[in-house]
Amino acid sequence: MACMLWEDTFYEQGETVASRIASLVPQVDAAVVAEIAVEARERMKLRHVPLLLVREMARYPTHRGLVAETLERVIQRADELAEFVAIYWKDGRCPLSAQVKKGLAAAFPKFDAYALAKYDRAKAVRLRDVLFLSHARPRTEAQAVLWKQLIAGELPVPETWEVRLSAAGSDLEAKREAWVSLLLEKRLGALALLRNLRNLQQAGVRRDLIADALQVMKTDRVLPFRFLAAARQAPDWEPELEQAMFQSVASAARLKGRTVLLVDVSGSMDAALGFRSQMLRMDAACGLAVLLRELADEVAVYTFSSGLVKVPPRRGFALRDAIVNSQPHLGTALGYALERLRERYDRLIVITDEQTADRVPPPAGLGYMINVASYRNGVGYRTWRHIDGFSEAIVEYIRESESVAS
Image 1 (spheres, rainbow, N blue to C red):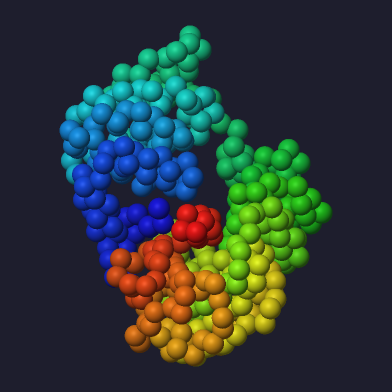
Image 2 (image 1 turned 180 degrees about the vertical axis):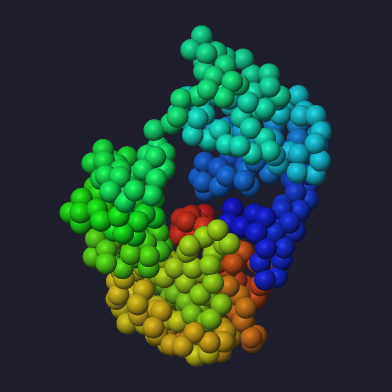
C-alpha cells in the first residue's frame, strides 16, 4: 500500500519492487488479491499498484475469474484505461484476455466527454486503442457520438485549469487574469491550490483572493505534510496554511494513550520522497509529527541523528521548525537514541529511512518503524511493527490495528 512502484531506492531497484509484488499474487487467494487491489485504489488512493495486481491476476487460471469485476472497479480515472494496457504489455505485446476485455469494456462508459478529453494523451497506448481492443459498446446514442469523436480525435478541448493557463501562454497579464478567474470560479481544488501558491504569487494575483481561496478550500482529505510542502515553496503564506492545516485534522478520530514520536533528522532525510516529488522525507516526518500532536491524547517528540534531542511541545509550523532545527543533520544513530530514551509510552513511533549505523534494540512496548523510503531491507525487525513506505493512512492503520488487537 505504501511502496514507490517502479522507483529505484538506495537498497532496491523499482523493477524489483514490482517483481516482488507480482510473485506474491499467485500465492494469495484470488478473492483476497482482489480485495487488496480495491482497497489500494479506493481507500489508499493508489493508481498503479491496483492495476499491476489485476494484470498479474490475469496470468493465473485460479485468479482470472475475478479480473473483469476487479478491473472495472479499480479503474476510476480515464487515463487508467490506457495505463492498464501499457502495464499488460510491459513485457511484450500480446492479446488481451477475455476477462481483461470485459473489464475494460465495463469501465469505459464511466467517463464523460470532459474526462476522456482531459486524459486522452499522446502515448504508446491511447484511449481509442483501448476502445478498439475491448470492443466496448456505448450505452446511449450520446455516448456513441462521443466515442466517434474520440476515435476521430475531435473531442472538445476540456475546460481545465491547466488548459486555461496554457492558453495564456507567456503573457504575464493574461496568466494573471487566468489565475484570478480560476480562483473566483472556485476551479482549483485543494491540492492544485497548494501546489501553485508560488505561481499565483509570482503572477501578481491579489493576496486577498488567494487568502479567501485558502480559507474556503475543502481540507478534509488533505493531511499536514501537504501544507508543510506548500509552505516550503511559498513561506509568505504560512499563517493561512497553518490555519487550514489545523482545520484539516479537527474532526479526525483520536489516538488514545501516550505517544512518543522519534523523528530521523539525519542528512538522508533531506532527500525527496520520490524522483517526481517536490516533498522531502523530512516533510513526511514533520507532517506526521504535526498530525500526532493534534490527534494523540499525549505526545512527546524527539529527534535523532548523531544524538537524541527532545523537541519543545509546539504545534503546527513551530513544531516543524523545532524538529528541523533541533540538531545538525549528520549521521544516523537510531540505536544510540533508543537506548537513551527514558520516556514512558503506550506506543513508540519511529519515522526514518532506516539507514542507521548501529544496532537497533527492541522497543520497551508497542513500537512502529515507519520507513518513508519504502526499502525492503531495513532495521529493527522482530518486535517492531514495520510500515515500509509513507502513506497518508499511517495514523488510521495504527488506530485500527490497535483496535483489533484490543
